[in-house]
Image 1 (cartoon, rainbow, N blue to C red):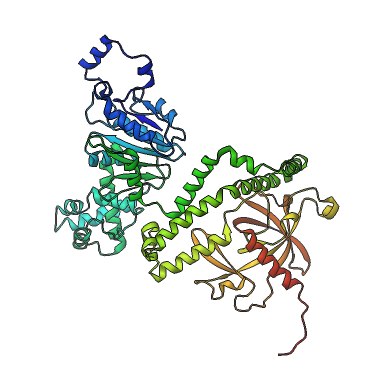
Image 2: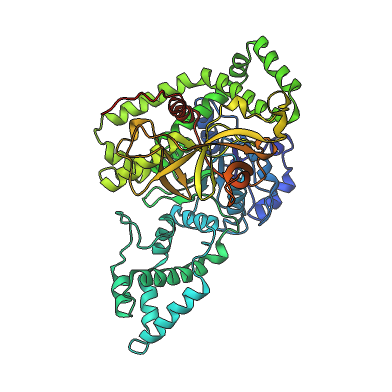
Length: 567
C-alpha cells in the first residue's frame, strides 16, 4: 500500500534528515511536518496497517512531485497497488485546496487495475466528498441536442407570455441534487423512485403549467435544465469518462467506478482506516457475484506460483501440446493456441475453485437465513423479482446467457450464428472438420472452399417458448434484446430442421468485421442448379453443449427411417 500525505515521514527524510537551518525555514513558511512534533498519532496509523491480515507493506510519499494537472510521478507507484491512503490537502500553502489529490485520484482511476483509496482529510467530509465527486464526473454525452434545445426554448418563450419568469421557476425546482440523482439513474427521466430521490412534483406541476403536457416533452425540459446544472459543474469535471461511476446517497460517503473505490475518513478522529474502508465497502454493498470473483483473484494472488506449478505438473502432456503447436500449419495454429491456453486455464482453476466455492456457500448460507430472497436481489442488483415482468425479463436474460456467448475465433466453428439472406443460421459441422488446413486429401476439387452444414433458425416472436426445455430452442441477445429461436417448426416437435450444405470461401476464415462469404446450390431462372455467392455476418455463438444438442437433433432427423404407419 501507499500513503500520500505531506505530514508523514518519507524514507528519504529518515535517511537524510533536514538540518536545523532547513527545519527553521520550513517552520517559518508553515511547512513543518506533524510527524516531527506528533509522531505517536502517525505511529498508531502505521501499526494498524501492520496488524492487518496479511500485514501490509507500507510505502510513504509526501506528494512533493505532484503536479496540478497531467501525469504525476507518484502515480507510477500505484500500478496494482492494494490500497492508497491519500491526504486531501497536499499543498500546505493552499488551505482546503484538494487540486493535487483530485489529480492523483484521476490518474489512479485511469489505471485498469482496481485500486482502493481512502481519502484522509482534516476538512469537512461532506465538502471533500462533493469536490472529489465533481472532479471525477464526466459531462453526459448527448444530454441536449441543438434541435431539442431549440424546441424546448420555443415552448418556454410561449409560456413566458403569461409567466415571464417561468424558466427561473422551473430551474429552481431541479437542483444539483436532482442532476446528480439523474446521473446515478443512468440519465433516465422520470427519475427512479427510491427513498433518497429528491422531490420532482414541483417541477412536474410547473412543467404542466408551462404547456409541457406530453411525457416526452417533460423529459426534454428536464434534460434542458440538467444541461444548465452540468454547465455549472463543468469547470470541475474530468475530461475522461470513468466507467459505471456511482456514489453513496447516505451518511457514509464513498465513490466507486469499475477501476476503483474511494472511502473517506476524518483525520480529527482516531479511526482505523482499514475498518473505515470495510464499512464503506459494506455500505456500497457489492453483489455476491462480484465477491465471488474478488475471492478468486485473491486466491490466485495467494496461491501464486504454487498453483501454477500444480497446473503444469504433467510434463508429458505439456510437451505433447507444445509439439502440436510447433508442428501445426500457420493457418490452424491460432485455433490450437486458443485450445491450449483454455486447457492451461482449466488446470489452474481446478486448484483454486474449491476454496472459492466454499466462500460462496458460506455467503449464500448467511443470506438465505434472512428469508428475503426478493429483497436481497433488489438490494444487490436493483431487480425486483416480486414483479412478474421483471421475472420474465430475468429468465430471458438467463436463458440467453447460459446458451450463447460473444463470438470467438477467427474462422467458422460449431455453434457460430450468422446472418445471411435475411435469416439467421447456425453452423452445425463438427469443430474438427472446420479448422482451416490443406484439404487436398478430401476436398481437393473445391479449392479453398470449406464445406459445412448450416441450419436455419426459426424465430419465436414476442414470448418465451412454452416448451423451452424440449431441447429445440435457444435464446440469443441481439442488439440488446433477447430473442428466442427454434430448430424446425415450433408447433411440431417432429418437424425436420431446414438445413443446407454450404461452402465457405477462404477456408471459413473471417475478415476483420467477423464476415465471410459462402456458396450454396440454388435454382436459377432457367431452372438450372448453380452455385450462388452470399455474404454472411457473425452475430452470436452457441455454447458448445447447446450446439452439440442441435447437432444430435439434426443427426436424428437425417437418420430417421420413416416408418409407414397410418394414424
